[in-house]
Length: 98
Image (cartoon, rainbow, N blue to C red):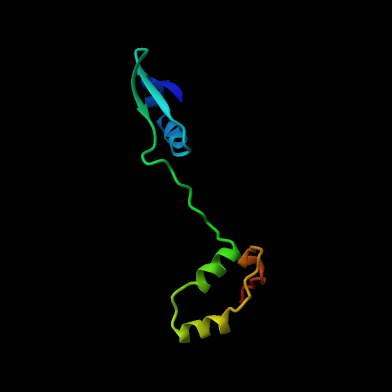
């Protein structure tokens, strides 16, 4: 835990808030005496942006689907999940028609 003065908190609040978001904790002092503790509440949780193909496959295979939905799923997707992520914007060149 880092110690910062009330003046530093006032002057560098943007930087300190970013560091709080990243999990840093601060003890704030006023005239050299401890005044309080700054921390995120609750601690930050970084969102997971991508799921692995295995995770997606398991989610969909265990989803409560009707027989018709399950047949449509197998017909549409089957085992076509790639184990590698790729950028959908690089699949085909985009040409502007004039």
